[in-house]
Image (cartoon, rainbow, N blue to C red):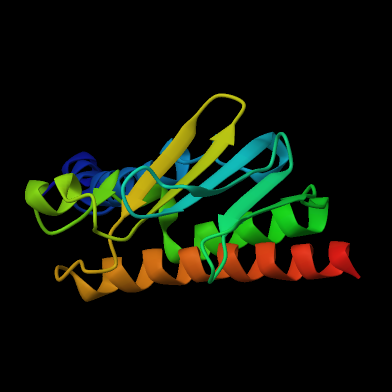
Length: 167
């Protein structure tokens, strides 16, 4: 085998697979590049049955929910930059950007007005990502865990923020 043939073989067997592997590995990161904390615009979070009567919108700062007595409670507060950074980092860690837009068992579950559901939407300058999640989901445990943790962190952040505003 000549020296030129050895170099070509080396390039084809080492460099080309490395380039292909790199493209496959980094493609999701490049695709999710617009989902960066510095491009964050707003967060919408809704939950409940039927028409999702409980909600928070970070643009308006309006937080409304039904308490134990089915009375509508309204609060008004904005998320701090620290809160936004925290929620964005949780979304990155949990792989929120790679989740499907609906996490439910079937279409029948989605159409059932008595089924508890959560709606999470992150809006960025160029893109937005929304996920509707039904806690009764029986599919992939990783997916259920990721969206469940994401939902719980948003809920805890909002509760902490509301408590701080009331005091």
